Length: 392
Image (cartoon, rainbow, N blue to C red; front, side):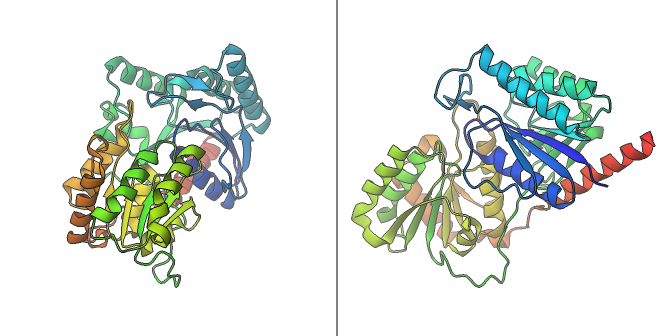
């Protein structure tokens, strides 16, 4: 059956949430569904939605690592009038599209600072003449809440408004219960899908791009400059000093940081390339001798899926704990070398590079479940079909 689906996503600092949502709506549209993605973050050039449509809300971003202050695209703190415009556009989209399924990214297990629009959205959805199924889409790891009452609030919101939760992870690797203490309260309506990843290169791909390189990346780049700068300074200190190094600057990296990195790289000449993020990142990742990156969802799963060796420097700013935990679990298994962000220096990074070269290849470890796209589409279609049968 073909269904109408509305997927709401908000990215505030990095772009990983938007990338995962874009991947899912692209495949839902390819499966024959009428899909709209409402995005509340800053636009990302070149975002591939396939046959899905985009409704761009007046964008907001966070100004600090604690996500307390939200500003618009002109860096003005948002006020009640701004919030009202966002809510109006979001609810108009809901009522015009009349979805059979509404998906909210992370909410109610996060995005508390967006309650001003997300609570009205799910309330309006439940008030439609034909109520859609309401589903929460979350990554494998939640930010740990320091306040038990916040967890109680999540359970209350889920019970009032939501039908199911999709956890885009592998429970054999990191179960949702690891970071959500009241997992048992929603276990009967929560489903692990496997990791959502798309565009991995074929094992027999012929391209040699990136062969033998050190590949340095930092996702969207908003907080990646310190890692890239430290990696460049670590190059002459490591055994990979004579290899070509490629640095990818994400679309959110400030222009001043990119310019500073280029200036720092000039003495290295042709041995160092400074480039924008590339569509063939996973091909470069498969071909490189070593990857150095942060520990975001997309990069980590791509690295686990195709890379040979890697050093991870997980982002640990503000309240964020998910990158650290994911990296720690992998380090315990010996898959990666991990440098805590607080310990990052050219010397510590160079030492970890040499250790990664002496350790086992990532490809010798058991593969994670990366079938999250197909499982997500399958679950959604099962739920929609069951609802049709129930209302027929």
